[in-house]
Amino acid sequence: MRLIDQSRSCPHNESNQRSLIASSTETVCSLGFEDQLVGRSHASDYPPSVLELPICSEAKFDLNGTSLEIGERVRRTLENGNGVYRTHGDILRRLNPTVIITQDYGEVYAVGLKDVEQITCNELKTEPAIVSLAPSSRDSIFEGMIVIASQLGDASRGKKLVDSIERRIEQVARVVSSLGFTKQRVACIE
Image 1 (cartoon, rainbow, N blue to C red):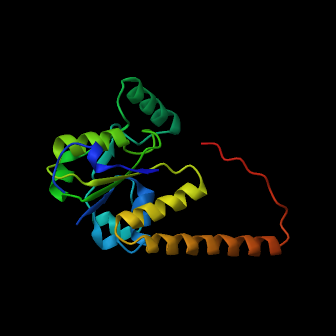
Image 2: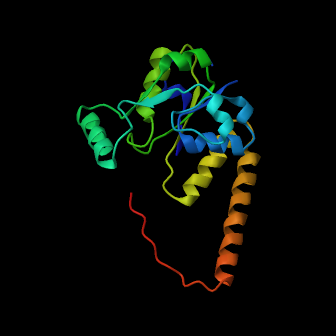
Image 3: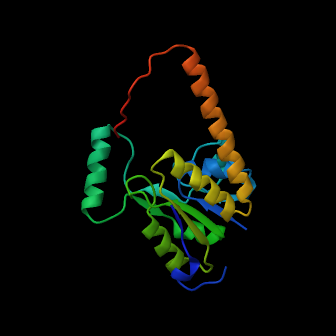
């Protein structure tokens, strides 16, 4: 994950937050900053209260159909040199965010960092801070929570959230081990 240095972006002036990935919307809310959210991605649906926020992104194709049909649409879109999602610059302009949270993990999963940087430079009158997450492990997810909290002005909230989650994971592990289940080896392939 990386915090985009504003000096590397286009020149603009500089309190709203905008999340372009569903998990970060939930993180912002879990950190106690939900009242600062002004927009969300098309995929953000939790907590239910965020459904009232404007949607700032969408897939460039119909998401209805079988996995095979949707996969074919994704493949065709990527073959044409396009990202899978579009960001609505007009909505972002109206919302005037001071922070945009996105990801740099692959354009198939969410709005790409390049797209966010381009919209920020070309369509916004201000220069919001861009927080780009690249979750690839439990530790990097936790690190992202702390980075978000820090960017929103209270890093201690991120540390408290991570500590709380780690305690819950340990508690579940203790309960499961006390039940005498045989430890399984699991592979998850997406």
